Length: 356
Ligand SMILES: Cc1ncc(COP(=O)(O)O)c(C=O)c1O
Image (cartoon, rainbow, N blue to C red; front, side):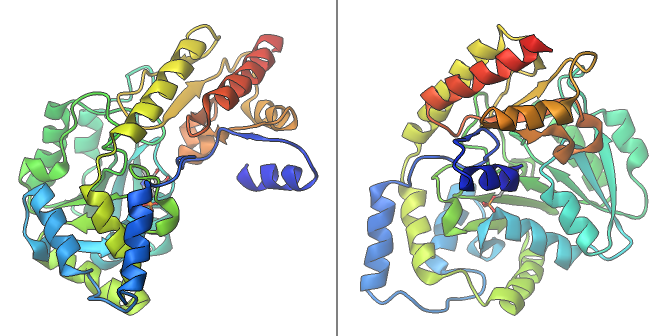
């Protein structure tokens, strides 16, 4: 969709990008200064493959872990990749909960692992069906991937559900990879996987969404020493280390509050919700994140042509099918646009729905 939109833009068409999953605002000027200062003081070299000690130490303090349990990665995506590549063998199974950010499946399939998808539903408020999860687990299951607040639904599961998932993992000796990149954008209490005290849990996060630092490519993983050591080997082999000045920018970011960013996103989430409430769509009221995952009336609307027509009218959205095969009737819209653009985009979406 993004590429099609770019083609139209090259031909002079104005597009409102409601498909994009990155903040439209800049990182704070303090982060810019930290980057400049790192450059000026000669911090422009290779570092330890797992990251500069001071940054690992600060993260360890934040999550109440030890420094040796932390790895700094080029974005959460690479942390997902190195965890899967270093811990799962071809033919072993990874359980994911759909709808899901596509990278989990892509990484798993890339290394020849088998993906088993638990399909959650809007009707069931995107709660994972626990009986099905129990049945899905086999001797061959190596890892489960969870992501709350969820992209695309905005769901945060209840603590007792999360605990049940962790207990199942513990009982069956399965690694849990918990992608928590949207945790700052939580509209209800959220607990990190690390708080459940399971030593085969891996927390993955980054500064991309919280601090608008997508282009800096920096994130991290936290787990037990053995797991981090395995991820570090992949990292040393593939990239040597994350760029040193970027690590210093992240160190500054870690000390910065993100209240402004959170308020901006929350305000937009509220505005979009009030608009959606008057439209003929179904959606879950997000507990967190930056997206609405919206179900269209499949009796009246064929999503694929709807999305194409929308693009011709100047609005780009992400098709639900990108997050799992069951979600053909859905579109994802992101609030990473100024309010005026959001309103304009929603007007166009609404008029197209009403025409159907
Ligand atoms: C759930 C989830 N995890 C991770 C990422 C990527 O994060 P990073 O930019 O840190 O690689 C995204 C990006 O959209 C995402 O939606």
